[in-house]
Length: 366
Image (tube, rainbow, N blue to C red):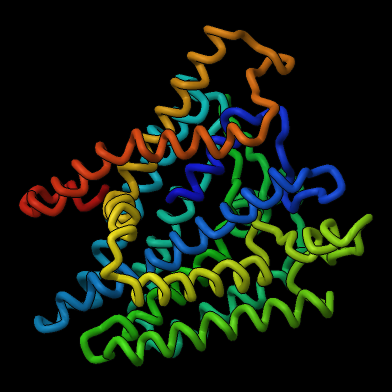
């Protein structure tokens, strides 16, 4: 959540220093490159944990024999809710356009669609679901050379499934920022590891599984990345050692390449293990609080950032062409830290409300 906040501060106050995907290493200062790399952890971990959360939700209904039905129903309802949320409240937070001229279909959209897909896939045997997840994550880059021009019957579905682009619908343009296909694989893998977090698996076993899976993912990334044969755009030797390292780490997010997923989920699995090992540590409690109300924090911080940007334009005016922007990259960290501290009491209040008022059904959707 904090890495996401950092990246959205960049998206708000450093629009004049935008970075493409994958980044152009020779044109991207390290002060922008590495915060962006940290933010790469967010989407895959969000989607992966959505799958895991769905399994844990289902496990609460196991005694009644309704586990899969309960999970499927909840995934379907919440998936539709998230898709609607993306194209309304979330998109308005980014654009402040009503009626919208452009709609950006981003991470909340793809989490919603992934949940809709998983609502059907939970009926598969666990091994089949895991196999499907691996095939989608590992194999979707084989489809990178497949393109369909505008007007072709497959143009719209392919833009949603695999190819980032613009879709024209009457007076509205849609940007498929997060192509869906590999994300279905990620959410399936998250659901598939659910038994590691069940009562039948003790903490020692779970820690062992997370360690093995995390290290295997990172070793797979290192092997494929070094060989430069498959899974992402090739890396190149840079003008200096730092640029070479940056190029080696420079993975593609839209759609998430195999190497992107191996790197980010490998780190994510090891973080899950590390956090569980330190679960009693006081410094983890604020992070757990932010994680207890993720959708509330997501919507809240987007609107706060938008109002901050509008206030900056009003006070200082556009100083980067038609935009207001900051030049010193230190402000990226300062603003993110101040916002985290400022928004924390609101998130803590809402997280406590969710815990206290379990009788209010709609709160669980946030």
